[in-house]
Length: 123
Image 1 (cartoon, one colour):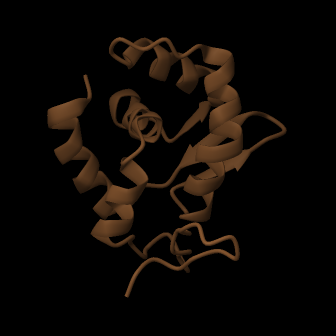
Image 2 (cartoon, rainbow, N blue to C red; image 1 turned 45 degrees about the horizontal axis):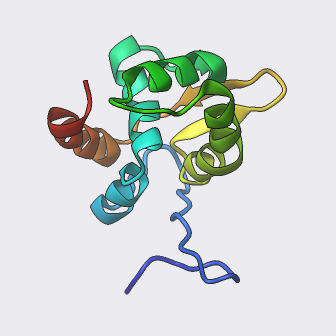
């Protein structure tokens, strides 16, 4: 049984009923497959905060990416249109687009997968 698909055939995250539900390991690794999402979630581990402005997280990502030519403006657009909706759909974050802030909701499976990935990929 694979991941649910949208009408256009792309994969979709499992929507959780409550914050107490966890993503499957496969869904967690799928979320962490993107380098920008890994660094986005890693920000909340390093800064030990649950809320942040998206601009602040973008700076963290741009400064942390090794050998990257990613600029902050294009990353903010990518986050806003691609990554934040996906993380919101999976109940990992709550995004307030009026104030450009996010609230992080810890998921035990994502945390374990991120810890493993962090030891190999993140600073």
